[in-house]
View 1 (cartoon, rainbow, N blue to C red):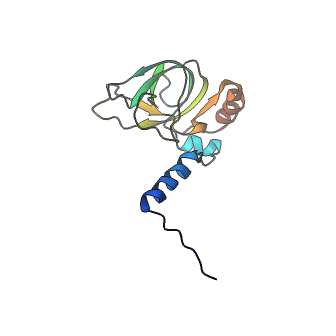
View 2 (view 1 turned 180 degrees about the vertical axis):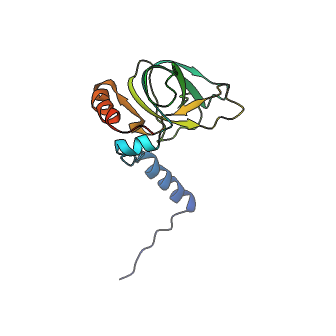
View 3 (view 1 turned 90 degrees about the vertical axis):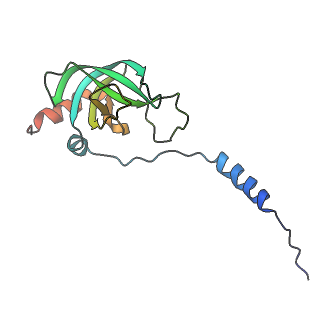
Amino acid sequence: MGKTLIKVSSWTNIVILLVFVSVLEVSAMWAKMSVEELVKRSNLIVVGELVSIKTLTSRQTDSGKIKIKEVIVGDKNLKEIFIAIPSPERALKSSTDITYKKGQNGIWFLRLKETGSQISIDTLYLADHPQRFQAKKNVTQILQYLHSQPQP
C-alpha cells in the first residue's frame, strides 16, 4: 500500500492560517480584584458622572470629564477630573480597550496617568480595568465598605 502525499504550497498554508485566525473570537481576560486591591491600586476614588467626552489632539485617546459628587480617597476639593479613554477613531484597536459613555454614573477607582506632551490636560486619570468603574446600583454597598475603613 502506497501513501499519497499532497504537497501544499506555503501560500496555501498562510491563507489557511489567516482564515482560521480571523474566525476566532478573541477577548481580553481580566483578573478579578477585591475592593481592597482596587483601593490600594487607586490614586483617586470618586463618586461621579461622566458628563462629556472629547477627542484629544493625538486622536489615539479621548478625554472624558467626570463631574464629582463625592471624593472618597484623594483631594476633597476636586469638583471635576479627566480620564483617558481609547478613541474609537484610532487605527489599531485592542481587545483590552475599555470605553465609557456619557452619562455613566457611579464610583470610579482611578489611577494617575503619566501624560505626554501631545496631551493638553495636566492631570489625566485611567479607569483601565473593568472594575475601576462600578455603576450607581453598586455605590451604596461599596461606600459602606470604604467609609468603614481607616483613611490613609
